[in-house]
Length: 176
Image 1: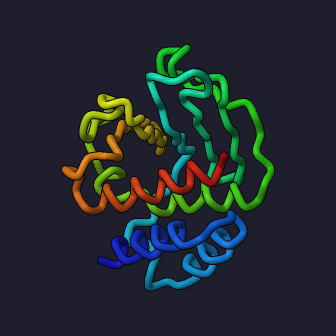
Image 2 (image 1 turned 90 degrees about the horizontal axis):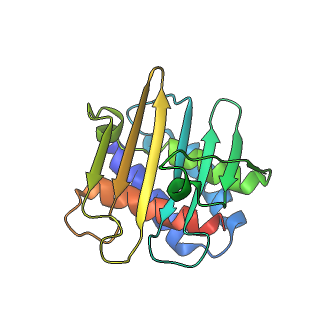
């Protein structure tokens, strides 16, 4: 329940704010409120997240790779997601501290059922089937890498995943 409150609070912050600095300040304040912290404190070697769109002209799969241990964020604007069969290569360093805080908030918002999922790869809905793009999330913990492909337009996602996906879409849009 606390995790869902955290996600809802974070998603509402993203919806209500227009600029990254406002989002950052409010996310930082929410992170300091222990009642909103997720119940599962996962550690990740890295996370990769982004949006992929099969029918577009350029920048069809902008991805970001975040290392929570070093607080480093890198971006890929080369569509390596498509060009290298899902082998995402994020080489452009992002130094903007606001964007790093946004990426960090994603780490802290990944739903427990994704973290604890025994599948190493799973699709939720039909991502990009209706030319609405899809959301990609990958994370590595110890020796396991998990990949998730999410249809963020589906009303059939469980509530926790819907909330997380709304947060992801808004943060991805803020990272442009």
